[in-house]
Amino acid sequence: MYLIGGPTDVAYQPSEHNFPTIQVPVFKGNLEVGHMATYAQPNGGAFGKVTGEWLKWQLKGDKSAQAQFAGAHCGLCKDSKWKVERKGIS
Image (cartoon, rainbow, N blue to C red; front, side):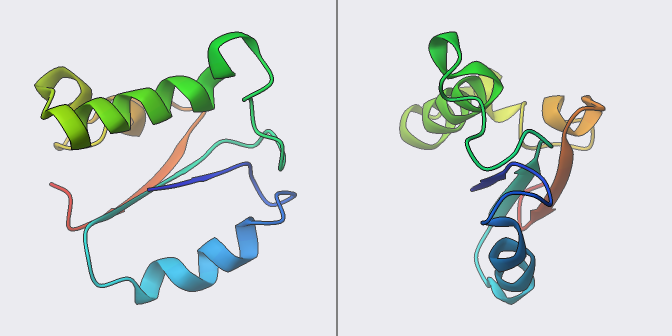
């Protein structure tokens, strides 16, 4: 999983370069908040919530958390604040 803070994030260009070359399932969420993301906000803000959902899905098999990332109408895919790209996650 890549979580990126938009074009001003120092990690933006490397993620744009690397994402197409990755050959395993990968999720990229882009929220234009800059390099420091939202982790300094209470409970990590939006990035903290997404990270927690990802870990619940990946480590615990949580189907509710999975719905944020997978499926034709994934939760983050429908959220207009996030730009989402996925490969190998359906």
